[in-house]
Every structure is written in structure tokens, then in C-alpha cells.
Image (cartoon, rainbow, N blue to C red; front, side, top):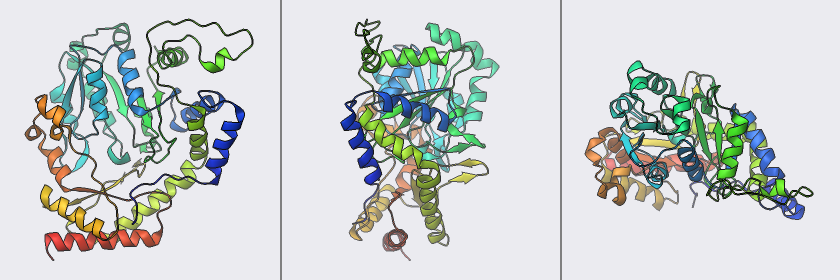
Length: 405
């Protein structure tokens, strides 16, 4: 069976983890701090704080910004539940926006129609690794109308003076937006290093900061670090210094820190990410593009548009004119040929909690149509050229069998 997305674990990673275990620093320590600095440099951001998951990173930012009951956060109907769950955790209301007609990312016009005086944050999601339309969304945020009706409810909201543009960049580390690192198009971006991501630390995430000049990024890093460690004034590394054991608790914080064991994996992966991992993923997607180029019923994903380039996290095909039942049968046929595939994602209104909360799938027609036709194919470093051909053949066979010659 060709798996869908196994992590790349080799001797370099094992050696780095072993070095960490022998060092005595298995929780947050020097390797986490080094990983943060290298991530900031790689992503073009001012400062980076590593966390135990992208989900906790998103929630920390919402809480730092003062998002709470009565507030609204706009996000895609077409996303993984974590994007919306963190809004619920903060007591705010997720406001869903539709996708573009032929692309998985947010439709800026749908975002514009969703903004009210309660809107505090917009969270675009870079589905599959392809950047959202950040400039268009930022123009909407900065319009005279939306600046005038922004109603700050916290000191940080007052300081920013507008809606926060927070990127769910769980898929898009290494993507480019109009010739620059995609994360820099947002005020803050949050990465994921889950086991299936391009760059993994087993579990983990990072908050990448790029706020306007009125914010002190060093000071904000310290604040978020305190928030991520129960509100302690010092982390374990700081307390390890001679005579520096005493600490204070400045707020009722959270437990969201990354460990040095995780960072050890990340350091190896980041060192070879741009020139090795990303290039291999791009090669695989190029092979898929060529293999499906003459298949009218198989719609290929947008991975490049000028100097906007995906991170090649997912290869999401769509089966033209297929309904949900046909798509599911195609997936079954692909699995019968020993090839694993997936679906990214079930839109939020299809999920029980959100359906019971009053969200209706009919209100997001583009998101549903994209979902019912979507199949994600395997993309990972060790996927061989031979296996890519096997995947292509399996998909073609399944589509022909279910949709007809």
C-alpha cells in the first residue's frame, strides 16, 4: 500500500534527537530557541515563538488580542475544525465565508460581506499550501468604511486600530506570495509541524510575528512566552542560571511550549527544507501535472501564479461534474489499487457541532462544490517516481470506472 503522507525520519533526525536526550534538555531549552531564530530568518518574520501545536498558537494570539464574548472572527467554511475551534474556546463567534468558485481559499468578496462592527480578526487559511489573497483582504480591512466601524475592545485592539490579519499558515511554510515569503503578507502567521506536514516536529507549531512598527516584537515575544508557560515570568532555561531559580506568575497562562526533542527534529528538517524537501515535493506535483494533463475530468490544483507559489503541501485534484457519492466511490476504487488518498477538508457546516450551531452548508455553495469533488493525492519526500506513476494510473482507472469512459 502506498501511504498518504508518512513523515521523513532518517538517521540525521535520529542522531539529533539522541543528542538532545543525552544533553539533559528534553523540554524547552537551547534547541527550541535556536529553532525559533532560524524559523524567523527563513520565514522573513520579525520574531517566532514555538508552541506545542498550531492550534494553541492560534488561540494564544486570539487571547493576546483580547478576543472574547461578543466578538466575531471571520474564517473559511472550507477549513479544518481547529481554525474555528479556537474562536469558540475564546467565547467569540466564528463567522464563515465562502471559497472562491474554483479555488479552495477564501473569496475576498465573501469576507467583505461578512464584516461587522463586531469583527476583530480575519483568519485566511492557505489551503494545501497556496497563499490566500492577502493584499485584497488587507485592502478590505483598511477601507475607510471598515476602519471607521472597527470597535476596539482591548488595549491591543486599540493599539492596532483595525481588524487583525492572522494567517492560518499550517500548510504554507515555504510558500511565496508575490515574490516574498507568504507569512509576511499577514500581521501574524501560525505554522504547523504536525507529523503529516512538510516540515514536522512530530507535534508542534509556531507563532510568527510581523506586526506594524507600533508593536515591540521583542516585548510581544516575551509576553507570548509567558502566556505559553502558565504565566511564569521565567522559563526553565532562564531558571537554570545560577541563583535565578525564583520566578513569579504574572497571569493564569497556558501550557503550550515546544520541547527540545521536537525542536531537534525541526532543526534538521529546516536545514534541508528549501533545497531538498520543497524541491522534491515540487517535482512530485510536476509529475502529477504531466500525468493528468490530458484528463478533462480531472481538474488540477493551482500551485503557481507568477511569483505566488505553493509550498506543495497537498495535491488536490477535483473530479469534474462528480457529486459527493461518486467522489467517495472513486476513492474506494483507488484504495482497492493499494493507493492511499484523502479529502481536505469537510467544510465546517457538515460537522455535527457546527451544523447544530446553526451553520448551513447551503450558505457556502462554492465550498461544498469544491469539497464534493476533491481528492488529495500522496505527496511526501520518499514517494518514488515509480509510485507516482502508480498513483496516476490508479486515479485514472478509478475515475474511468465510476464516471464512465
